[in-house]
Every structure is written in structure tokens, then in C-alpha cells.
Amino acid sequence: MAGGAPERGREALRTHACGSCHVIPGLRGAVAWVGPPLTEWARRGYVAGRLPNTPENLVPWLVNPQAVSPGSAMPNLGVTEAEARDMAAYLYTLGAARAQAVPAGMPLAPGQAGPRDDARMRPREAAPVYGQGRPGG
Image (cartoon, rainbow, N blue to C red):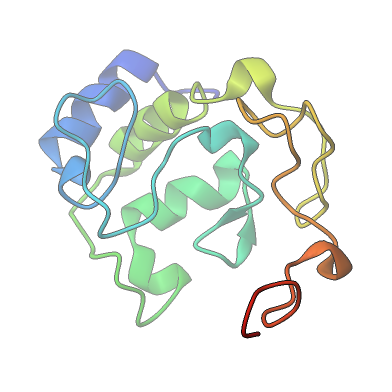
């Protein structure tokens, strides 16, 4: 992340109490599940569920989330643009070592889904069908 410092970003995430809503690796006490966990951020496909996950989209989201996604549960925390660049720099270190060029929404193959051996997205036909194969079902 050009123009941002990961260590300052981690401190800004702490200062703005981001861990009161998110799980954030490397940030002591950031274990809340109000918002989505920010684990492996570098591998995420979207910012705010709407925009491609790029620094050009993440920084404005951190500065003014309601301008990007009106009505979102993410509050405006008074983050400056400089702090947002630093926060983004830190977030993009999370999962960066394993980040791969996988288009957003595409299933991940075995070995690309983190610590689990199986893929995280399965084809619909592989999903369990309730009532089949179970007694009384």
C-alpha cells in the first residue's frame, strides 16, 4: 500500500477501536464479531460487499463508510485519509503471503482455501440435501 505504514495502521485501528466490532489479527483484544472478521484481508474480493478490494476503494471506505455504502452498519469514526492509508497498509499485510490472483466470487481449489484441506466454496450439487440419507427424513 503506497503511502501507508502498517505499524501506524495497526495503531490507528486500535485508536479508533475497530476491534470493538471486528476480529483483527495482530491487534490485542480485537475479537468482536459485530462486523465481519478482517482476517486474511489481502485475499478478500470486496470492500463493503460492493467494490473490488483495492486500496483505491478501501481508503475512502475507511474515511467515510456511509458515502460508499449508505445505511451500512459501519459508522463514520473520524478516520483521516492518512490514517486510512496506514490502516489499509496494515490490513493488506493480513493474508498477503498466501494471496493469489483469484477473481472475486470464484471457487477456491483445494490448497488455496487457507488451513483447511477442502475448498471453501462447493458446487451447489455437493451441498447436503436435507431429508435424504437420514433416518426419518
